[in-house]
Amino acid sequence: MKRLAPRPACPYHRLTVRRFSLLVCLGAVAAVLLGACDAQFTPFAARVDGAAVSQSALDAALDSVADDPGYRCLVETASGGPTHVTGVAPGTYNAEFAAGALSLLIEAAAIREVVGRLDIAEGEVATQLATTQLAADLTPATGSACAVTGAEVLADLSGRYRTALVQLQADEDALAAHAVGVTLTDSGVASYERQHRSSTTLDCTWAIEVASEAKAAQLAIAIDGGVSFATVARKNSLDARSADAGGYLGCVLPADLKGSLGKFVAQLPVGVLSRPVPFTKYWLLFKVTRRPAAPLAQAAAAVVDAGMAKAEKQFAAIVVAAHVSVDPAYGSWVRVGGNWEVRSPSGPPIDLVPNPSAVIADSNLGR
Image (cartoon, rainbow, N blue to C red; front, top):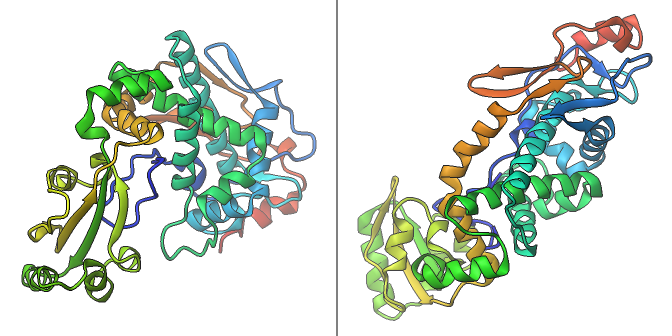
């Protein structure tokens, strides 16, 4: 995943939460089943730089997602069906799903070790930011079959796994802040806010999206003539979500808007209607009604934005440098397209398959 500002409500918002795609975007169904009778496991699921990722931690992750209807819907929708979570026998999980979960736990352990070694402080503001980022990240896309909010998905995860996800996001945020010399504590963020007013001041922004410059100019004349911005937005804006609110996008940081839009809006005088602004194939009209200072939590998001590009390269380097060993029952630690991940076993060891018919049934899954 990508903040404590409102979840982006229109296509020109930028979302910087890193996606937990290891669990949401899974590959094809694997033949190996986990948790079957007579499976031989080591005392740990993996080791990362000498520290164990326990079997119980992996079990908690798998059980938590499987028992969370909203999260399970996200996984199944992204990967094609329920067989991408469960195995063919009761009490088993798909091996590809388990490998993805273990990969995420390994990444979390590697990053946690670096945060501890660097002695990077994390305050309550870091936990608040991470929680809100995850809720935004887990919110289904518009039109999704999953009728649930990201906050509900996160709340329904078991405490242990939810804590692990929040800690991973907080650690990544802390490393991003560290990249620009800031700690995600109240005092660290407040100091940054005093020194970076332009990036930590909120723009309470309204927008109208139309298909042509001529249409935007026509609507601008109507607004200048006394028709309210909200009325024009409700009747004409092509972005249905913001149009329903009269074009109101919320009070956002400059970094919350894509490309150069944030800089443009930040320079727009309060109460002045903008000129038509091109955006991809559309044209936009903006208006800013006030500019309050960002609350500490949103200022923390600005800190993370400032350092995230550099930190994302660091995340990959941390995982590459980690010394990882994986219980063979779950697969092996391999490099795939520049990234390291657990690849599930290629064939079904006999002691992991509950019965011969399960292999046949598994070959028909997803058809």
